[in-house]
Length: 264
Image 1 (cartoon, rainbow, N blue to C red):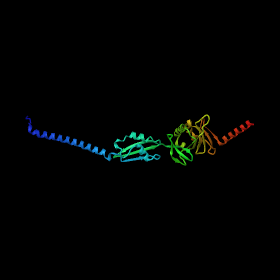
Image 2 (image 1 turned 180 degrees about the vertical axis):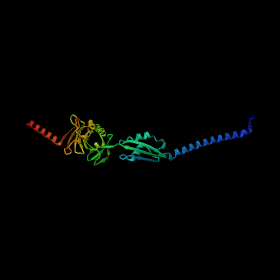
Image 3 (image 1 turned 135 degrees about the horizontal axis):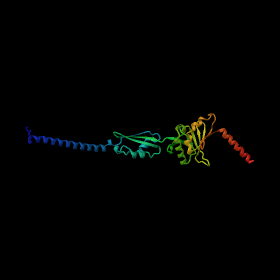
């Protein structure tokens, strides 16, 4: 069998063509990378790489301008250089803001979604009322004249006592919390945490802060066993029992009579 012989003269043009194709591919790759780098430089130097829009959602107490100011974002901020953790930490320095989510969207938009602390009570100051947030912070920047969606706290002067009460309020169901009209701090010689609650249904509750949430959980079941026409005080300190206003008045009369007899 005869072998086919390819002359060197026939092979040289093919080798030259292959080398030329490889060189062209290298040149195209090099030029592509070169122009890509130029485009990137132009992009990062242009306004297209900067933040063009900042939108804030979920805020009601804190203004949009205040949140944007806290974020330190502006139309000079590089879109790709935003550090989400730093932005979040900065916004969370506001005591009214509980949570924030940062979302980037092409081409250069930023969305800030915030969750504010809930108002769970109000404190009285003069003829105005101010929100007590779930973190214990009192929001003095906004006055409320007729609060109706949370209990009013009266005579709570110490910060530690107020914060502990707030923690207890957060533990009870919202339905029970909203049924409280006022919570007065009424300390006694033996219990500086003692308080008196005035309920929307006409009952009074005598309780202590440190067992308040646990004891108050049974309030609906206690009320369901009572005659709605007979109002009085529900005691939730150590045990749980009910005293009508008539019984309390009778006890007061008996004490006054005993005192009068002792003075004779």
